[in-house]
Image (tube, rainbow, N blue to C red; front, top):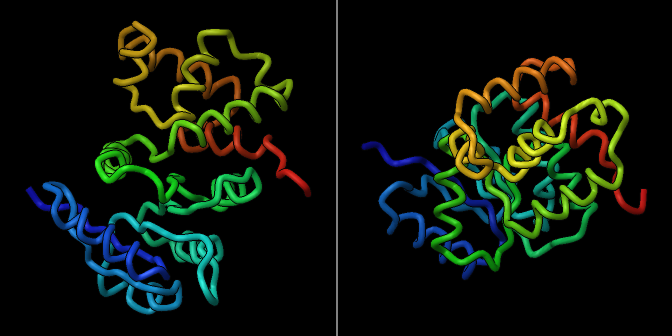
Length: 213
């Protein structure tokens, strides 16, 4: 099995080297590049062709969020996961709305980091439980009338997707069949006037206002 290619952008050498070691010792991942700046990644990204980018937010020069936006604007087919010490709402939601595929804290244990990245590669999203809870709290507090049209069960399915679970995992957690999950998703897409899980989640996050803005 080919290993999943990951690039790291982290300006702290010890953290960068530690993550690189964890990835290279895992059975599913291989670090194709470890950089101290966003500029260095962008210069080499077409050469290393990563499938996942682990991106620090507080970088010298171009910030992690700015780099994320550039990667998405270039249509580079890599998932970008923000890896940071920051837990404040503004950075979380700025990252999500800029196109981040996940948001993990640097204190995430190595085994959980690897598991989260593997889940992301298989259709889920990489997000610490406390970050997922914060997203849900903001969503519930600012629920738009558009979402009020969803049934309780449809909201349950949507909430599980926000947490990053795959369709199969949603089915297991809600004690329903995968076919039932797909049926609820069709109703969710119709009511929200979207055509995919990505569009549905993007619509959710766009109704969550930034804090202190």
